[in-house]
Image (cartoon, rainbow, N blue to C red; front, side):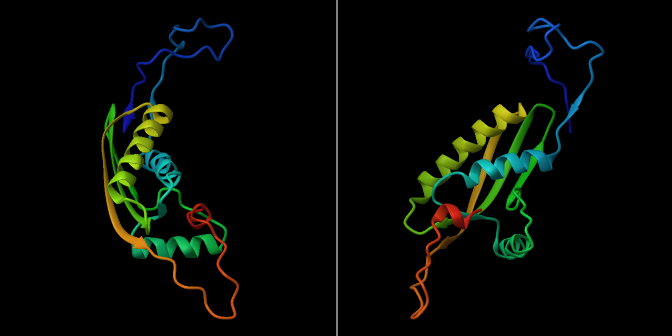
Length: 154
């Protein structure tokens, strides 16, 4: 979608005053993939999120991680308008995390990140918690799993 920036231009060019329009103008296009990536990174940063996406997308993500790639927008969809955006997030929560409080924290993080970094107004963040991750007991003879919840999502 096309987005016309109506906000004043910060003084990054020393010759221009703070509120001066850019000579020649132009337009800014922000893709849905870019917004989804910003929202995904913000959601993953909330404690209690084990992973983003549904079962098949998490399996694909595990394969991607094995080959050294990552998709920060996995499990996140964004619908971008001219000045507004709506975000849908599918996630797996860690067992023991209060789910409604987790959803509220994710919404707050996504609203803040998208509005600050992208410059679009967030009209809604829909969250679907598709599963709860319960760590299994350690296997006999194997070292205990030392991954923290934070390492699990990266």
